[in-house]
Length: 231
Image (tube, rainbow, N blue to C red; front, side, top):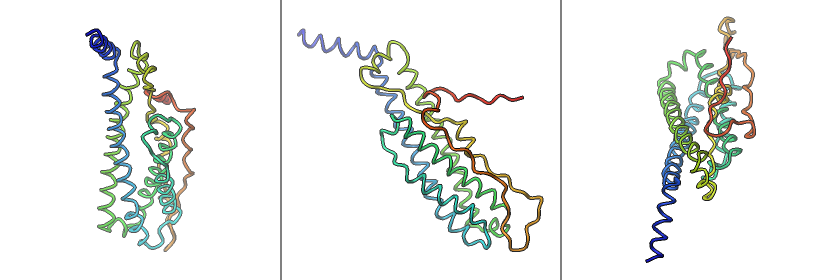
């Protein structure tokens, strides 16, 4: 009888210290992360068709096309495992690779505006609509993940549930740094003022976006990135 009373008391104490909440929020975070990965994979699957369609356009700027191909290769080469959620460095590497792919795709869409025949291609227009829809779903999935991580990290850092986190190894989880990825994803400036020579590829005046910071420079998980001051 005493044994059962001790078990009941132990379960009650675990519940009171947030153990059940950790279990729930941990599962919610994993579910949100899975949706993020699904949407990024959906985007990666669209790119080969986009590249194949653009290649059919005569004199399309090859540098822009090559950047998309290489960025996709780097993004899909990043190994993502369940442990990525507990590894800020691996998470930052994943975010940087996806941000660079976003930048390359943005550049491609901007440059494609210079090619009327490509814009008139129904296949390209359909792929562009699919890409835009996927980007929107990525944004929604990322926001849900950020919210799930915020709830989890607040629990992991608050007293007395932080004691439960220490005992059961519920470490804070990394989150997306929206400001840094926004810098990576800035599209290039296309010069529409100078008419291109017949048959020549358009000139794009843009430098490569800055690389995302290393994991050590990321803000603590669950905290917002500092906003830039306006003057």
